[in-house]
Length: 601
Image (cartoon, rainbow, N blue to C red; front, top):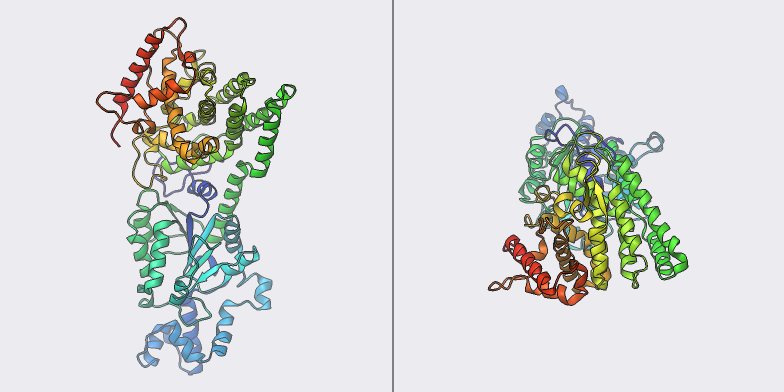
């Protein structure tokens, strides 16, 4: 991740540029963010604001009536010459151009480019519109709300080969395709310049019709929101709707060029919302697009990954092709080492949105390695490659470097996130194939010595890659992804969420949760494997699996324990010379310990 300066609106100590977080989220959670685009996106290419059109039309009327506008006060002129009619877009157009043809001709000069305009790059889609269109083409954006009358967004998106659904009136709401089914929907809250339904005046902007109101409220409730080119000073109905959204499912990002409006301050004061200062639409959206493309480059294309998986499946059982299997992992580990060497330090001691984005970025970047490891361990039926699985995990442990800047524990510990996930993926595959000996080897053989503390003292990988060593529970309780409340075991919930797809890949949808429970229990069992006789039971981590197995009248962890005892060869977990009775007593001790960790959900 490229180091970028913190925004001036961020609390003291925050490091993550909101653009970094937003770009990672747009790529990993495609379609969950909507854009709110104001006039700032179009004025840069010569399109007037709606109120600018009204002003120009009043001047046309004053010239036609040969009455002078005094002191440039065109609103006063209208009040004196309009016979009491309210100043508004529709009233003006009907006064100047009563027929459809004349209205079209009148409005074309404001919104449609002449040859000269085109030559000057005016009244045509600008860099902001084009960047938005490319985000739409990537699937990152599927809903756009705008207060603009022009059609520049439509034109830019159509140039990408996508034809948007445009909702510009109450009647179009009633016949619209559902948001989740449309490739992209543009909601033009104030109407389109080609009709008489535009909203301009304070009265017109104070409310929307019922259908449009319901659609807007649904978007604000169900989608994250990125606001650009809109201050919120005049559109009372829209401002009220945004403030009325009591809780957001996803964060809100509000870009501002100069003064931060009072509305923006109130809305972004909520948890998970941020102001991105000193930026315009024409700089913000191209920058955002480039960051999304950079994040995307971290993830392997499915076709390329499938080729590697196919090579692995063919080579794995062939003893002549063992080096080919190893080379597949060497290539992935090279990318891991490069990532670790280029990683920048941060200064944010508490940044849940940044951490959330980093988890998604890291998982996407190293998913090819995780999937290759999963399939390799699972398909190694005769355990010809067990040495390789231990070696790969050891290499992943070794990539961690000493901090080269301010020490921020949660960020520095994430250097071990790839190894942390590899260990879980390997155990998941071994549990699925009932290879308890592979699990024990992965938990006991890799070792690591910190380059900065206790130099020379090696620790077992299972301790270095402990759930609470690599991940920070306190930080993870406040991740934006938790939309239904803070989980009791947030780090466990995070890991299970990220591993869910791999668990389904191994054992199907209905058995995936059970498989993840078994994996967490194996980590608890790992603490029965001390590195010395003096260390008996050291800090087994509580996790979501603790809530999956009920305790009844002191029966402890009977279900999960019986599952373990019945699943495979438990001798791999016994000490040399240990009797079955002694081993059973240690299992009972562990169950009692875990029972003490369990809390009612």
